[in-house]
Image 1 (cartoon, rainbow, N blue to C red):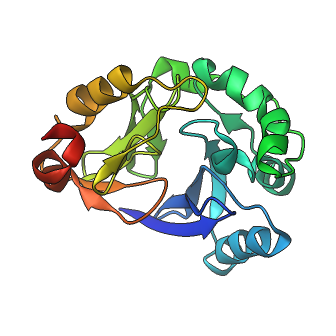
Image 2: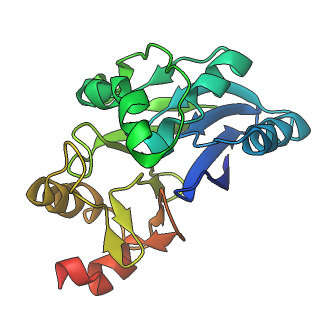
Length: 212
């Protein structure tokens, strides 16, 4: 069985997700921890729950989702895993962070492991890597069929969708990703978002204003 916990970090109020199995192996997804207090909050939770971080996954590489990559890399020895279409965004984090007045430490050199869209095995469960570009050119979502949830990054929100006015964004592509990759999931699937509260596929299919 998989267990989930989220933190809301940094000035963008980004949701960082931990997913762990009964054997305590743990994924760190989109670490947005920015301040020292946020970094210690993440570290303390991992210690207190005796978790063993084994992979660092970035659904996409906008600054709010990768600010904690250097801390996770230094603390747990994990290399961020991304889709290759996100490499340009990751390499530009320090530069465009200055536009927002946000400092970013040097990002670790990533693995381009998500290109293969191979399942991520965690304990006895699997997370399917689903290609869902549009908000960002190489964004992926992580779907757990056995427990009925999807980590959707900034693709789909409760009552909204990801913005497409940032570098690499494309509204047509984003809407197609949602229709063909997320709205094909069961209605009861819980959608855990990169910002704000969680929702369900059924709720968004029926009520999301972008699809009415």
